[in-house]
Length: 299
Ligand code: ADP
Ligand code: ZN
Image 1 (spheres, rainbow, N blue to C red):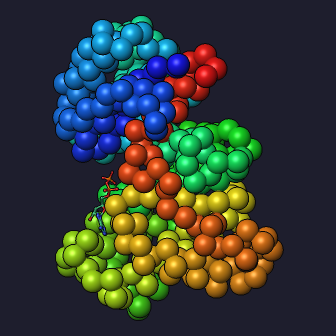
Image 2: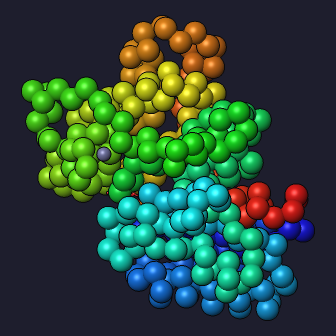
Image 3: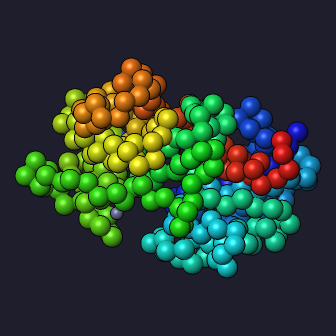
């Protein structure tokens, strides 16, 4: 059994786990994200305790908020880079953990981790090219392309694609600190709350907010469909708890593509093309374990 450690590092909380997969999580803990010293220290303490109890770990996986540096050849590999989160700008995240625990560390975005986990154990099993998007406090996307997680220059920033924005229909200017009305600026949970003057989770299911949200999400997805050609799209994150969004997004995607992308996966099986994560809210922490298993010896 390949026992690994995983950290789902979010802007508000860390979730740390030890195990080998969804059916074998031996221990899990969560604590708020405070300063890097304190939060990384707590993670180190947790894994030290766990290996006393369960035996040696093979590797550690970190699936983190970003932007971050996932390039092992870079001098700042394992760093959180230009994040606006106070205290975390240009912080070495993987290094202190690797040294304190003396383990190989796999370091990637939370959404690339979630994509990997969904491919291994969830909604994208058997596929080699697919994307995982989270629609929450921010919007982020991870991508598996031809069987490898997509990094390239740094890593994808799918939440920041630019969309047509009809200011007559929707005067809300958007809230991305860098771009205003990019996808994240228009369609994140906080954008919904700011536009309508109440938290997204309190809007009734038949509120016009959801058709507009579906429209923006569909515009984003159409861009990803025509560039990456994903075989499936997984939509997670707090906002997608609004299950009525799925049929609205599917319909709008087909309208916007207007018959141009000819695949039965899209045209005949859209309900299985745009789907929620099969791992649900566990995709993040399981993503960290999946990353670790890639770093360690083959399972
Ligand atoms: P994070 O992105 O911080 O990791 P979440 O994915 O839970 O966390 O996203 C939080 C965002 O999702 C908040 O903006 C919140 O208003 C929104 N949200 C949470 N639950 C719901 C819900 N049931 N319906 C609509 N929006 C929700
Ligand atoms: Zn942006």
